[in-house]
Length: 487
Picture 1 (cartoon, one colour):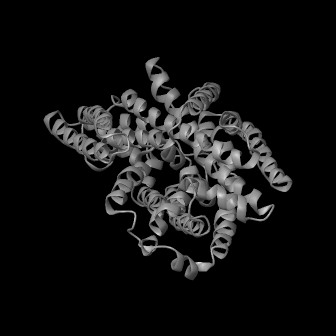
Picture 2 (cartoon, rainbow, N blue to C red):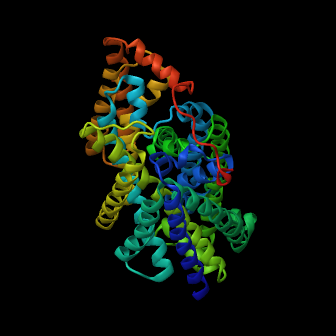
Picture 3 (cartoon, helix red, strand yellow):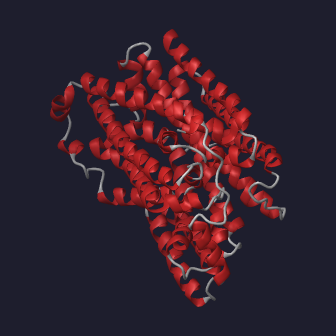
């Protein structure tokens, strides 16, 4: 394992070095939170793919393949579909707004009265997303170094918090690009073909496994529908995803770069399911489906390659964790703390001073994430709660604001409150993992949004006019001229 250890140590040291490099670039609020809004298409595509394909997509995706066969790809597949929909239909308009958070978009659209409430919901979502990503370190470091759960979480979490705090989005962007390359090589180019060969090829896999393992819909239609509601729609509205859209230097970068990233996700989804199916042939009686990834890596890969593939898994977890962390800190500082203090700075106004404040919030949220991750046991339930609150509370007012002119601030606030409360109450009644909470919560949010919007005075014409100006890219400063690292 010495060679494998060396690969991992070099990788982790490189992540910290990238954090130090990013600190020298992040000298304004724009550079710290959205990388100066100047990422080119290749870097944008790589970092967007990196953030959406985390530990759940890698370790969990292989686990679903082990449990259901090829249809286990649907969870990650719906993530890719959501990213494609966001990129094709909404990303250009989102990028032109030149804001930092989803709540700022809601304020622009509805007249400045939706920020704090929506910010609290988004903060809860990003916090739990960061927590669940951080917990995944325990699985990887247990395979690597045979350390206990708490030490693994502290070790992995500390590295992510360190480079995220130092350089903000610049550090996260560069590290995510490295992580994207490592994941591509480790999972797609190495683990996938090796797993298929070790399992005896596709003919042997078909001979040894039930036919439902090769049924595209074997996981069940209701499960697929729930994945679409939670993950596809979740991709459309999450702060962690929007904050990456804000880094694009142009409309075309956001649209086409995101389309490339979404397509990559579809390929990654199928790869994870195939790897899991191969693991089922080799290890038919594992105690847990989620153990499939670690088992096949530990037992079947040669020295050096094993270290690189484990680094790929670590990269997947770190990408999502760092992206969720900076999103959580951005929302906590800009949407909640600044608004409660009555201070909402405009872009370009005191940005250098704000870097320190945002850096402090990343550190504070990072410590909170590590502590909660140590105390929390059920990752699936925590992630389900996060996505249910996000989709049930914020999907309707966000998409309504983008698509329906008649939507009002009162309708948006009612939709957030009723949707969030409905989801929470239904989870208590039906169970956290039940499908009904997000179904009925989303319907309640939609009904309230439409009824209240139609029953209240239309949004002020001046607000809508300013909103259309922002959507058209007018009335905002253009981002700085791209430099060589933004290609």
